[in-house]
Length: 361
Image 1: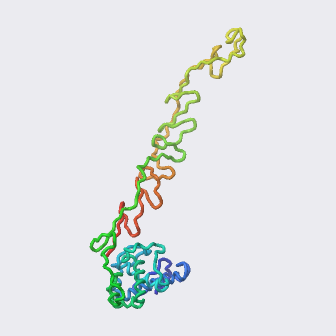
Image 2 (image 1 turned 180 degrees about the vertical axis):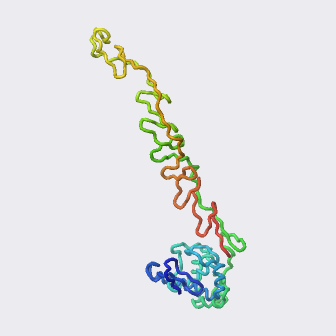
Image 3 (image 1 turned 180 degrees about the horizontal axis):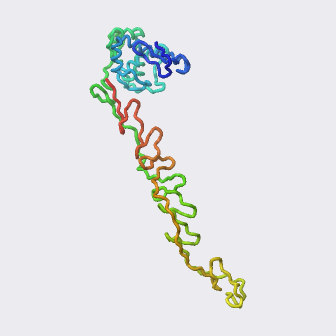
């Protein structure tokens, strides 16, 4: 076991016949409990047992490259049989020593279905535990030692264990590739459609920033008080009682009855003997019996407010994409135009509308 000085990152890993651990591995800063740390070390020691029984360092170096031993994993992956067996044996060793020989059922990552047994480390670990229940743990080591360089899969292990101990049934033939994978010669590949759903054609943004106004597809500075905007121009608002004719404000002529309540009967309109008894509202000319207001038209004042800018904001629950507003995608999905795309399964490479996984045989 090699405990590095000044290394505070990473998880333990086995390099052929020794285990690398970080500086703080033996403290509570790594792993939740001492029991959890013991499980990890026991798992890694299982790797070294299989590595040494399989051959020398040069052989292990070749396997390390061929089966890509150095990778992150959670036990749920569908991998090449060599990698899956290497991890599966370490899982078996761990369960047989500190796991009370309990079968793995998923934990943080669910086991795949039983049809993927020869390509999944947890399924292989359970199969090895079943075999060790028949022949004992000693025989499990003896078959490795008796066949150096020849056992790199569960099928190869059980086939040689059957020769050594006929109580173990001969394994059934295993196809070159897992179910659902195509045989490409040196590799197996699986391509699946990436999860997706449509979210409509999208709409043009209509929200403008603070102090701006949306008008005919563009954002303009809001007009001053007493003005309203039409495109790039702010126009004066017409006073109350005036009609807006576009460039002008218009008030039509109007004649109403005068207030003659103060006039005597002999001068009902206040035109002769009782002048001044007739009254009109402010702004009207008094004609005695009537009040007259002449027509009035005046040009509205205006000023420019710039050419305007394209809106770049969408409403609540929407997302801006390529100049259009779409409903935001559900959790776990990301938007690209009118489509919400999900994520590829673990271990698959994203190729746009499809996901592909390639494993070596």
